[in-house]
Length: 381
Image (tube, one colour):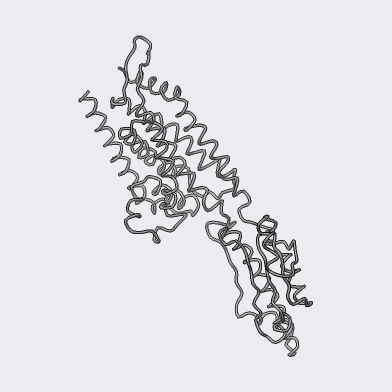
């Protein structure tokens, strides 16, 4: 069979398989639209909290007004005791409770540090941390005002008092994530994992399907054991996923407001071996597993472990050594690090030669083994 017939046959097999078409096209488009939605606001703001004021002083009421003015929280209720907050937590009317202790004003006048308690559901760490951030910012501002007032009482000039209340000033400049948001942090890496998982499913499912296909002149039986069909499938999937990768690393990130810094050619140089390695790995999965539904199940179940061992959600240094070694066999681990450093951190291309070499080695190993097993199976048939 000629190469032209082989390509036509593989294209027909791809587009006549509804599961593969939905995975390749529908899955990628749907994920690109739905996955970033929960992180559209980047950071939680105006979280509802309740106040328990045991002091009932002028200064405590000032603290409450200042707390309500922060972008992190919004005071929606004032309660008599901490126990009264339980039903409001249960009904999700509030996300936290702040308790102002008795003698709050007196301790401030005496130069002591009153303890303001913060309660909340720490299982939602981002929400809990935002409430604490708002309370700390308010406490620091109020403390600075008290220190300036005390300095003025000791005949310290106002310009000097406003500069002496703290030993240093903090100018925090976020690097690589200007918004300090969760979307900029996690979406680019997850997009690469989505590309890998959908490509693994498509390559594996196409690798196990057989069938009789009518060509222009005669009927020819093309099986997955034919190495020529694997060549054609690799080229077709690479071409399709190059377009998908361009969409994920370009237009999709721009639509979601994610920072992009890499040149297109630099990303293309990293994506090409990644796609080849993933197609080779998917072909090996199709050779080892003969049922399409099992392939889909295994690939989907592996997504979360692969996400956490990729080194951007959880640091690689905190993983066991054996798990870090296993992670290096997944193309997603390498490409996530390379694309994040190029596209989000502005690294130069020379610094990614190690990742690029690793991806090409994976591509050669997985594709080489897949072709070997296909040819061996064809000869045995």
